[in-house]
Image 1 (cartoon, helix red, strand yellow):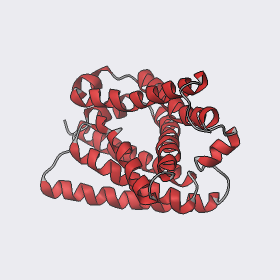
Image 2 (cartoon, rainbow, N blue to C red):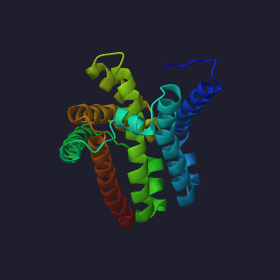
Image 3 (spheres, rainbow, N blue to C red):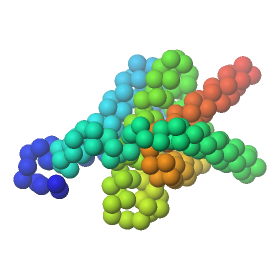
Length: 239
């Protein structure tokens, strides 16, 4: 089954996809132009609510499209985006390996930035760390990381694989993933995100299981939070 503009259900799925894309890209872009103002307005409840809403669209939109437009059963839709029990142990193992790779990449980039004298200030990130409890962060890490993987590596990348070579699909999905994180507000973090996307895309293709990238993504976000939290507390104590 293919998209038909004559079917109201297909138009509804298209509207949902357009809205999700708008939600992914426009607010972060606007936030990148006024990071200080955005950081001052953030509260724990607003951060959590925004994260859960975004996650619901990241996961729900692909499933709605696959069921309504592509005519798949829900189980087939989950299998399409590579959410399956098959090879789950291998997927978890590759997820851990990918996390180590992301850790090494982060260390390398941090060293290059240090030697180059480049500072990566992130007011929004600092505000989130300062205003959000550990329990809330764990919920956000688990849900939003999984949502991003479902949308970018599960849905977008798999759709691209049907039209272009696998490596091209991985790269294109990674670039889209990177643009979605423009709200970081600084060039080094924006540049590294597509590279992370390529690594995550590779392990998904390698294992044919989205659990691999979800595992790596969650672990990496937790690690970043721990490092950033320690750094922020130290800087606060020295003031």
